[in-house]
Length: 229
Image (cartoon, rainbow, N blue to C red; front, side, top):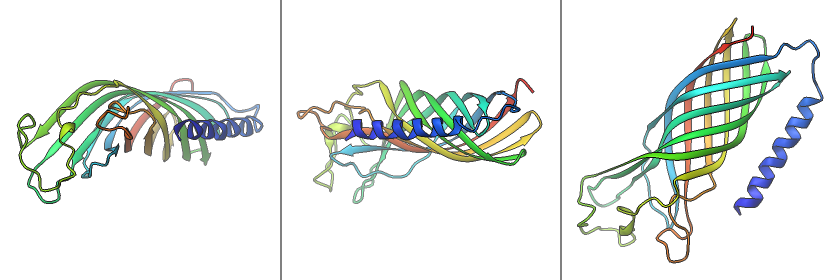
């Protein structure tokens, strides 16, 4: 299922690039923007077998560079530190368990924008690569000597299960708005990440043989500076 999805996204992205390139404005002045960003991460993990999860909030922060040579179209590369992972939901028990996975993430985006000289709306879409750089587990029970759980479907082997794949990859897309004040640009964006790789092993004998892929929403505020203007 994953390979056709990637092919479809790439095909749509290619069509957008070709269409936009045809409207080149010879009077358009190229832009090189650099800046910093910070915001919140609302992560989850698509587990199969399923683990019920609470909504929780982490952080994301990083730097970005955007190059625009065509009217309505640009390219973005970022380097972000982002918290992902999951917070397990225990319906009948007073237990808490959270696994926080911290990644260095590098997205490569096609940037499609529209609007006036001062206010732009935009769409970002492209692949993303991540490297696991940190991990933290918090629980109010002993994960080495597990208590009795009311839910018979609790996946007990998950609490101390080591991460197998430290490289994460997927597709990300975002919508947002930016305010342009001469060379100073402020950007508000909401973004969704659809992971295509699994955190843990996915062989038939593994605990999560179906899936253990990162998902999540990011909301960030960026400040960018026009270098060339």
